[in-house]
Length: 561
Image (cartoon, rainbow, N blue to C red):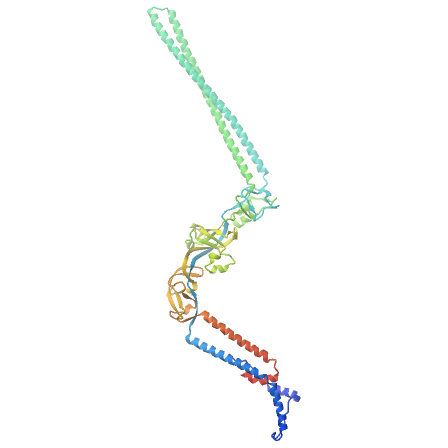
């Protein structure tokens, strides 16, 4: 420590002061001798005694300064001796950390989009004026309101479509009535066919009887002819039998003619049945057409109403009462999802479960498997991204749900979907987040900070510090999982061993080191010394400046000490 500078005192200033104060300064008395004159000697000694009394304060001040000077000398000597020792031993300052037995995970991350697992874009199927929006406590439905499954949320003017439905229903009713009439005609024609067939059956029996009678008549005629040939009967008897045969034959022909007529009636009745059946099928087709028109009209009518598909929350609402809605405004935004969200009338989400979809590079995506742990890091928790407690501090957690096996042609990426199960209340549908995936993990591993491992000739090494000898040992290690700020040591290090984490670039095997914590304490002691020196200078400045010039002059010698 250097002594404080003291400005030299100009004697001319004191001379001027002495001239200005002649009355207060004792003038010297010139005498030849004071031995023979005691009174004069006493008079001469009185000013000297008075001057000594006026300088009494110099004694304690001199003691203080001597003490300060001694302490400063000892401090400077100790400091110089310490620096000499350090220069002599020259240990390398390092910082050490202990290897720990701790879980470790290898994380990969990517930007992803949050979507509810169940969500529905509700849009009208037809154009029209909005005439109804669901009520909530005297106000219209808005974002954040809960809805129930099947609840009518909104409706547009449906009078024209309702008229189309009524018209289609009337057409269906008319077609069904026509079908009923045609079915009656078919039944009547079928009845006539049945009657004609019955008549044919009866006539067939009559024909059989007529044929039997004709055969009997023929037999009688033959028998009588033999008897007539014998001369036993007259010719009139033969003629009578011939007439009976002719009558029986005529009867057979008559019945056959009736049968032919009845069969013709059956054909006519069958034709009538066929025609009635054709008309019946036409009625069925007409009914189907009318029913189809009715269904279309009903679907169009349903398209004027928006119902809640499930219990959920309104995420977006872009309609108001008495505004005109156009389907074109929504269909024009199909290629722009954000634009679609700004145009679609209502979006309902199920807030009970969310998923995050993210794209990973093909090389990273190959490490992802369903069931792996996933978390979402909060934007304001950047500190969590620098430690292995990411999974414990994350507010949203989940599991990998699906990994797309195909690579996107343009981005050459693999799409990963994660279902979030914890903290879903912190997610918003459509928001962008950072998804972290633990692609590898071990629950019990020997872990060290990343900077504790150095690579020399592409081989990993660590320096293990021995607190007893103060030396380090260079060891080659086998690495395992690499975490965010830690690395697994598979072979070469045991839990609890101290590894050099800072300053190892200058180390070699067996070199002597000193941890930075000890140097830090020495630096703290040096700071205390500097503070003491600063206090001493301030004391001198504030204490000496108010003194009179005469006192400064007399204390100049002390300050120089």
